[in-house]
Length: 424
Image 1 (tube, rainbow, N blue to C red):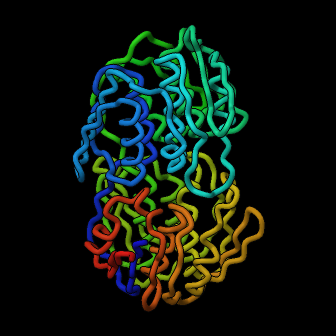
Image 2 (tube, rainbow, N blue to C red):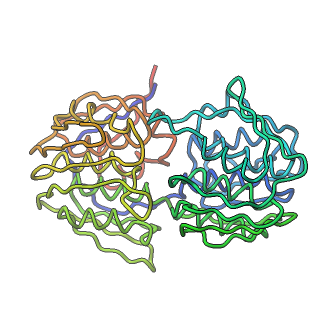
Image 3 (cartoon, helix red, strand yellow):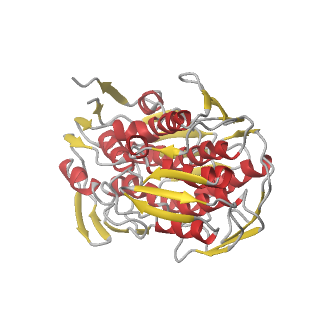
């Protein structure tokens, strides 16, 4: 397996362009199943996850035109040749489960394997299935597959989520676009990626309102058309590079950043003593730390607009070199502190107690071999390696390739000493 070799102690100075959002792109790709006309997505991130989903869609009969390295992807689902998404493909990535709703809404039936993805807790799909049942689907789970049918079509309904779920909100939105009548989603997730999906669906002829609020309304239509849509910039990638600059020190400008979507992250960085300058109109965030000490602060992960769980591991790496003690509480996923023992291998002082991680800042991290356990954990080790003295080797970086486009290139362009080492 490939690994990353990082020689720490170099400040970061320069500009990093932000790629399209993985968490938005995947659901936008699933939306191609709702129409017989081409859907063209621009600003597409070239990632293992998005490429995995393009392969799954192709296996269902979608014509995929997406040259290697290109940021424009054309999806044409004029005729589906299969409505079965097998385990071997769905297991690679949890978001691929979201092909179920669109195929069910369009074809009246679908069979999809239960999903895989990062090992950061159980993350059951009960809310997805409950929403589809509320829309009139007959569901059966057997042998690791969900078999769904709606012979007479889906029907609009009121769906009240018992707790906020981004995936279930998006899945219900996708399915409800072709349902008969009005669907109301209560206690819906408010993440920016949901609004991005709604924008694309509305361009396709859907009638979605309220996306980005706790109540989303979808008036079903008979047909959707093709369109072209630019994937929103990735707020998690933006936050990750902002924290990398803060940890290593220097002066980095992030270009094409979704400034308004990152209020909680920016506030946290300001509170810990990092200089952050933003220009929402230009889409830029400038991060500076030149010799000043980081101050330890407490952070609780929350659904948007709170501090994102997908930035928790990166922030823990930052707090590991801050003055004082910080408490990081994870409120979204269980089992999402697997990076803590690996950060400790670099000299971090972290104690995990249930949902809390108590981080006592140290003056200096020191390089060591470490192993990535999931997507966000892996990049927290990169951040720590940039700040550490000596050489850090991050192993199992296939996790990184799932969510970060050209990471070594972007960081080395700002002065980082980082290179990919081919595995045997």
